[in-house]
Structure formats: structure tokens, C-alpha cells
Image 1 (tube, rainbow over the protein chains, first blue to last red):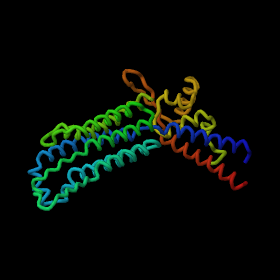
Image 2: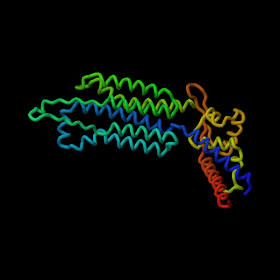
Image 3: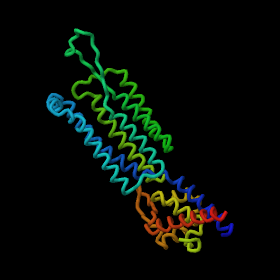
Image 4: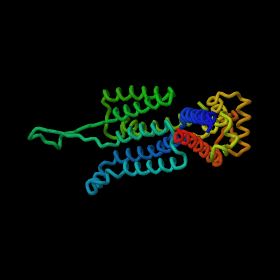
Length: 215
Length: 99
């Protein structure tokens, strides 16, 4: 083997490596998954709001079948989201940066699915039936979505998701210190229901448009 | 594929760069131009050669009322390129053994 062949091979491999690294910023599969997950989360939000506003009817089912609360609706939607993911990845594999972003967003989702635990301690003699605990983790959910949006913006180089993330942080602080009513269909429930689908649809369509423009 | 049977199409660094970039998904002419830093004319000539050899396919459509041309690798193009990369790896392996 002569030196020229060897040098050419090394040079060509470095060209291939460099080009693939530069062009691995593709969001074809990622944006598709996010758009479909966004649509799925709309159904999840509608069902969750309906369940929350029919707690009296649902409490019988939850008492008889305690496992039902874990399976429906979150469990069913997790299975559907997994099926969508596998179906898309099978046709268009995630490449380069897409893989890292997907890990970031899946971890963010898991963080918000982990059940919250609340312990209420009361002194002996206090009637616990009269204790009312209001708990709302929406500001934390919104803040976690903001972090994911800002990190996505930093990794992709697109500025817009960073600005949306900053708005989310502002809203989450506002909600954390404002006491909004939590009974009935409250503004906070609607916001809660909208936040996840909106974020996923926004990011999915945004990345798809950027790709289509060749940016 | 051995060293002597590398297709002529992979003798050009620009064509190697075009095919490499298409390995990560379809690209527009503008994107390919940005990646390869080639002139419009030079890029068109090399794309045409790859198209003639059925290594890539061309899609023409409109995006926001503007004509857009997108390129994607064919199954044949992908296979030839993977074989070519294996041939390059073999060259390096052989060199390591001979050293």
C-alpha cells in the first residue's frame, strides 16, 4: 500500500466525520414525535380535567379499584406515547443532537409524572376530617418545562425557545406567589392542561419549520 | 469493496461530502451549499453526476410560494457509501497490521 492511498483514506474519513458531525443537527424525527405527543397530551388534559371535576363519581371507582388511579389516564397515555415514539423512530431514526434532546425531554416528563406525596401531621385531638390541604405543583411543572426549553435552545442554537422558557419562568413565579382558586374548573387547571400540549406542539412545529427553511 | 473497486464517484472530495451530509437526512440545495462551501455551478455538476448514478433522488416542491429542491440518498447510494466507508476502514486496518 502506498502512502498516497493511505493519506487519501485518512483525509476522506476526516471529511466524512466532519460533515456528519455538522449535519447531524436534524430534527425530522424529533419534531414529528413532539407534534404527535402534543396532540396526545391534549386528550390527556381534557380527560384529566373531566376526572378532576367529577371527583365524587370517580371516588367510588378509586375506592373499589385503587390501581385504577395509576393506570388511567397517565398509564394509558404513557403506553400510547411509547408506541408513537417507537413507530416514528422505526421509520426515521433519531440522529445526533436529537437523541440528547429526547433524553432531556423524557427526563423532564418523568419528573412531572412522579407522584407527589403529602404528609399531614396533626396534634392528638384535632379532627382530621376538617383539615383541608390544597396542593398545586403547577409552578414547578412550568419551571421544569422552562429549563428543558432553555437547554433545547442552547443546544440547537435557536433563540426563540429560550424566550418562551423565560416567559414560563415568569409565569411560574407569578403562580407560585399568587393564590388562585383550586376548586371547580379553575384558571390554573386550564393552564395546567394547556402547558404540556402547547409546549410540545410549539417545539415540534418550530423545529420542523426551521428545518424546512434550511436554517 | 476493496481498494481497487472504489467507485469513481467517490474519487471526488465534494461528492464524498455531499453523500456524507445526505446520510443524516434529506437536504436542500442551500443546505448542501452551506455544508460543502462549493459554488452553485460546481455543486450542481456533482449533484447531477450522483443523480445519474442513482445515488440520490431529487424532490422539487414549493415552500411558502418559493420553489425548493431537496435531495435524498437512494438505497443504492446508501449501500455504496457504507461499502466505501468499510473499504477506507480496511485500508487503515491493513496499515496498522503492516506497521
